Length: 121
Image (cartoon, rainbow, N blue to C red; front, side, top):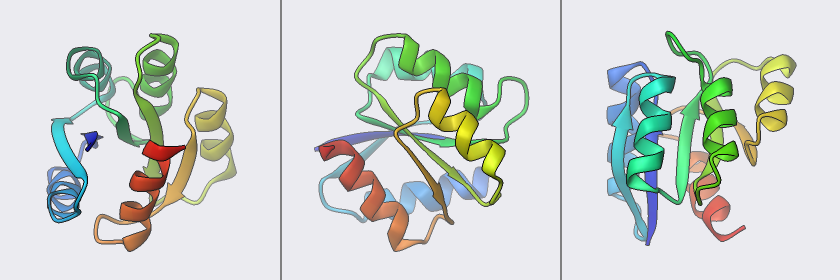
C-alpha cells in the first residue's frame, strides 16, 4: 500500500487528488496539508511514502517544503505537481530533492500513474 500526503493550498485541488487516490487500488491518502509548513510537519508525523507537493502555496512554498522533507531523512519521496509550466520550478524542485515534476490536474491519469511509479522507484 502506498501512503500519500497531499499538499496544496486549494481545497478543490486537494479534494480532487483525494478522490483520485481513494479510487486507485494500492494507494491511500493519509493527510492533507494547506501550506508548506504544515506539509513538513505532517510528513514527519505521518511518514507517507509519497508527498504530492504543489509548488505555489502561501508562507513556505512547495520547493522549500520539499527541501525540508527530503533533508529530514524520512522515507517520504516528493513529487511536485503544478499547472505552471516554468523551467525555474522544475529545476528548483529537483534541486530541492523532489524525485519528479509533473504538469497535471487532479483528474489526470498521469497523476495516478506517477504516484504508483514513484513509490516503486
